[in-house]
Each structure stands twice: as C-alpha cells, then as structure tokens.
Amino acid sequence: MAIEFHCSQCGKLVRAGEEHAGRRGKCPHCHQSVYIPTPRKDLEPLRLAPVDENDERERQRLLEESRDLARTLRREKDVPPEVARAPLPEPKGDVRLPSDMEHLVTEYALAMAAGKLDEAEALAADIRAERARAEEVMQRLTMDELLPPRLAKIPRPVLIAYFKQLREG
Image (tube, rainbow, N blue to C red):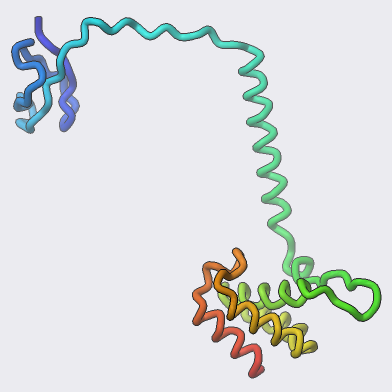
C-alpha cells in the first residue's frame, strides 16, 4: 500500500511505497528532499462535541461587548486638542497637587517628541509660571531609574535635552 502525502516544498501530491516510510526522498515534481511520513493506522477520526447554542450566544455577546468597548475607547481617544490641553481643575486653595506639574511636564515632553511644537510651547508657558516646582519634577524625572511608562519610549538624553530647552526658554 502506498503512502500519500503533500510535498512540503511544492505542495503537490506524492506517493511512496511503505518501505520508504520514515526516510527522506526526492519529490518527483520539484526534486527537493522531503520526509516520507510513516503511516498511522492506529488513528481514529476525532469526534467533535456538538455546538452548544448557549455557549455560542454568550461568545457572540462577549465579542459584541468587546467591540463596543473598543469603539468607545477610540471615540474618547479622538478628543480635540483644545479639550486635551485644558488645564486640570484646581484644588481648593493655592496648593496644587504635585502630580499636576508632573502631568504638565510629561505632556510637554510627549508633545516635543511628537513634533507638536505649538502644543509644547503652550505647555511650556504653563510650566514656566511655576519654575521651582517644575525644576523639582524635571530633576526627579531625570534622576529616576525608571521613567514613567508614558515617557519610557523617549531616550533619556533626548528627555534631558527637552528639559534643558524648557529651562532656557
């Protein structure tokens, strides 16, 4: 009885005698070396479970929910620049949270990295209004071993150059 298989190189049907099973031979079509498989007589057809309609409906529902969430996130991501650049709400009194300045400095670095110079200059004006706090944040960011995840793709020397430009402006 002949062994039938498809050539791994050209995909054409090849027939070989059982005595050649487990060896390598040449494909008669493309003449490439191919492995001749051994026949498996002990294999039974794989029995498939019937499709559970409830599981299929639940899978479809979850898939649609996932798509809706992805659409919502895409819409939220497409916020106009004026809204995205809007200042964060001020806490009561004169005290600003330290994360506000870190947010401004981070946004400045990201705008510079993206080549959005007008946006970066607008952020720089807000940052320069509080130079002392901005200096603390920039110093900490350049000294930290690990940068915040949003700044991780900016090489440290480039980030330091952005901060130097911010200080000199």
